[in-house]
Each structure stands twice: as C-alpha cells, then as structure tokens.
Length: 217
Ligand SMILES: [Mn+2]
View 1 (tube, rainbow, N blue to C red):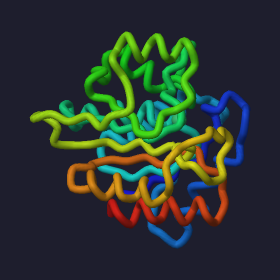
View 2: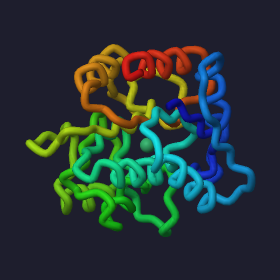
View 3: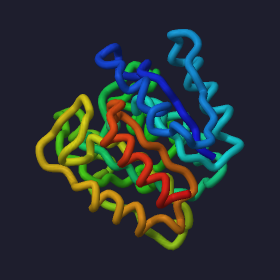
C-alpha cells in the first residue's frame, strides 16, 4: 500500500517544502494520504502509528520524523525485522522525547522498540559529537544488518543520502541514484515496509522516488 505523509512538523520549523513532495511524486498512483489536520506533531505521529500497524506499506514523506511511528508499527508486526537507514546523518541527536527528523533513531533505541543490532546505516557521513558518542556506545555504523533471524527488512530512505539531489541538508560524499537503487534491489525480496523522506518537491526527486517504488511494488 502506498502512503502519502505530507508533513514538515518534524523539521522544527526549518523547512516546509517537503510537505508537497508526496502528492507530487505519487500523482496518478493509487495511494492513501494521512494529512496533519492540526500542527500537533504528537497526535499526527499517533495517527500514523495506528494506521501503519495494519498494513505493509511504502510511505512517502514529508520529513524523517514519520519513521518513528512507522518503524514502531513494523516492529510490532515483524519483531525480528531489521531496519536499514539510508541517510547522510544518523538521526541520533539528544532529544526532548517527541520524535523529530534528527533524533528518531535514538528514541526508538532508547525506548527499546529496536535493539541496536537491529539497525544499520547506509551513507552516514555527517555525525555530531553527541551522535558519535551514542553510536559508539551502541556499536552503530554503516553496515546492513544480517543474521540468521533476519528475514524482513524495513528500509528508511532519507534522500539526502544521495550525492546530488534537491533536499535541505547537502553533505559532501554520498551515493549515486544508481547505487541506491542497486542496494534496494539487492534487499527487495525481504523488504516488507519502506519510507522515502526529506526530498524537496522537484521532478528529479519525484523520479527517484518512483524508481524506488517500482522496484519494491
Ligand atoms: Mn534523516
């Protein structure tokens, strides 16, 4: 099921273009939209959680905070499932409790929703000191989680993992669209849920989002 999550509530007011990305990218495709009705981030994330518990999905955001309820819902359905986060940043910042685009991974680990060994990154290259400390403590890094019990994957794709594209945080390095698609293709058989977030609403980002969807659908 395709899910549109047109929100920027988790950006802490830094950019709102990402609100328009899902409807543009999903134009002409059958999808369900969960729209924030009030600027109430907590309630919005709860609504996403309730919905996502009942479905396998490919969700298009919106900002990266939506992965907090989405991964939580995935783990409820697939307790042994692993999370692969494609991102320039590890999103492990010190937080206030309510998930945002920069701390949702840390909150999921601290709340025990995911074990550190359940989580691996692709393309992380900009890490703050506080994030580095947390990552070292929990042995987090760029690797794809494996293991005998690893039957199912959740892919969380922050498109700022790319070397080139239209998004707020541009970090040197990064992978190409071809590398991203090849990695998604290699995991495809075991992917149950996925989110694609943080891109600006442009034609080339919509194209990349549609390419990812067409691999997984
Ligand atoms: Mn992110």
